[in-house]
Amino acid sequence: MNGRGRWHPGDCLDPDGQDSYSLDDALASVGPGWADLVRRSHALAMIAGVRVIQVKEKFGGLRVYTEPSTRELSDTLEEIEAESFTVCESCGAPGDRLRVRRWWMVRCPRCQLPEAEVAPATPPPNRAAAEGIRDLAGQRALDADRIEDD
Image (cartoon, rainbow, N blue to C red; front, side):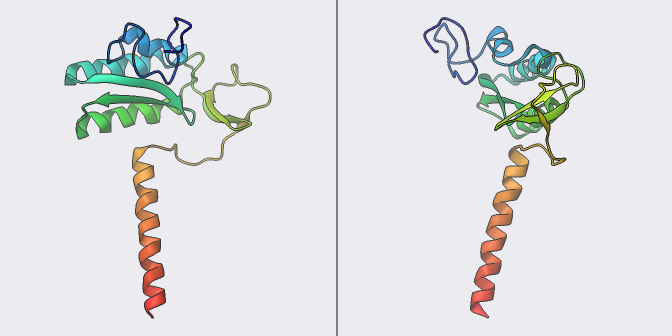
């Protein structure tokens, strides 16, 4: 908590010192346009019997962290996180991933900031993509080793 008495993205403990986010904490951590996505994510975590330990925006998309987690829950949360890349965080309308200077966000045309640039058409970063990048880096290292051996 930041000492101002209000919940802010990035805080890992709720204002009452609990070790998980309540639904209200989670909703206050991101823009109102993602409220439906947050409610769905939080409900899934509660059904699974796990704690929501952080909810935030990262690289323009919703992130929901739970503890402990299961593969099934992680896969479902990743689908919701991927959906967030198409939903305006401000109002909930269909939106595009944009960049303002170094900050990524999802905004609809009505909520878009004038200085925003539409992001390149690349898949949103997520855990699966990160795994693929690590796999690719490992494969490149193996290829480099083979070239040196030849």
